[in-house]
Image (cartoon, rainbow, N blue to C red; front, side, top):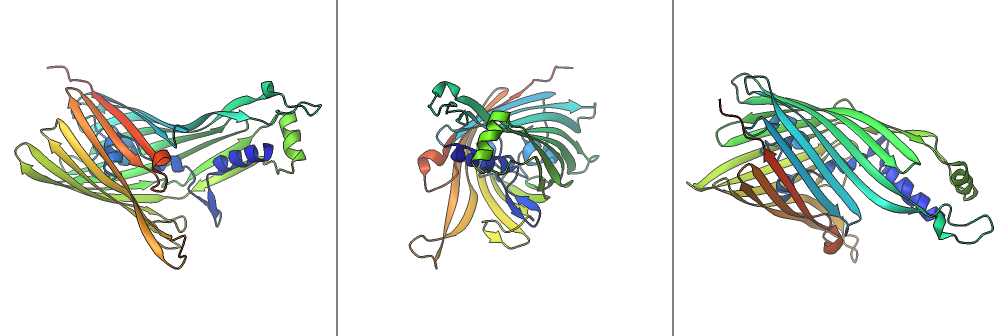
Length: 363
């Protein structure tokens, strides 16, 4: 049991595949996404998301949608309630020209109340359940965001300063940091956005600490106890286009296509190589009078070998859908999101998010 506990702890701690001195999938909790609107559209929102949730998707698009201050929150539960994913965001206008915005965001993904069975047995070999203690494994990210329109042009630029905190109970902790930069072009019915993430190369520095009794047990079981470690997250890029089509005076449709590009080794994406992997996203949104929104999207397309025929491949997609409702100054959004088609019950999540826009005072 102790070996299993230690193995699970190290799997979460690493969350990583090493490729020539760098890590694949490290800080992968930052790839899940924030906002039910975005998840309902299959994450295809690099060009179209322009609320404070754009701090995550495309910081150059970061605005408060006409108000001086905007607040947002999201909660999601993955894997039948095992993993909690939460987001809080705040944005505000800067200056008097209405072209600059700043904000802060906090993201947490964690598994709580994990039993620590290292001290399950007393010195005499008897099981003592009162020795079991619980701990949490959690990843945190703080974003400090700034965006600005370039004069009177259709271009906006922006960026994030990211602060990463990863915690594995009292056993291991890590600090990290990085930078994102982005740009957006907005036409009358067409938008283009591009984001470069971790352009500074994000580094997570780990430190480990075990009690003398825990350390003795782990050593008796033959475990190698680390003293320190580093995770190196290489830069990645995301690009997106969005086209708004007017259906009639009361309704329009937004069509979106995004692509995420990673350069840290071959991944299981639709387009893949040893140097670059590309994952496309497709989304659409039906907007009725800026009050009711219906959404659908594809967040991932992957290829895999068939179990009964290893020489043949098959493709599977991760479909998402959602709905949104604007009630005055509050936007309420819901998304039905999938992580894996093989186990619909455990990989399906009901995602709720809300945005509140403070009304500007009349002059």
